[in-house]
Image (cartoon, rainbow, N blue to C red; front, side, top):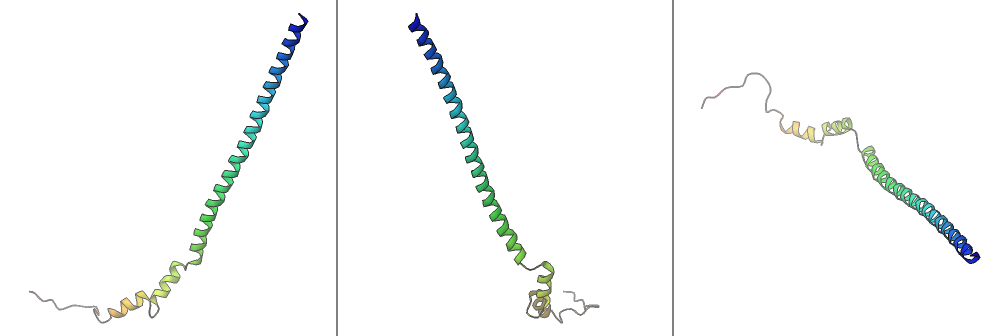
Length: 100
């Protein structure tokens, strides 16, 4: 009978150790998964921020709309050349009408 009691005690102790090992493994696995997830999220956010900052820098370095309009109106600019090509085309006032 003594031997049976020792076997049952050893079995209970074994179950307790197995349960504790499972809890420890679960806790460690959860913690490492949490850390891996956060590391992945930080890498992903950094990648998106790099793309965003590159886009903002690209826009910040470009001229404003007012500056572009000013450049276009200067000699050699698109608006200036278009207006120059049309000078004398219409001076305002009545235009002779020809019936065909």
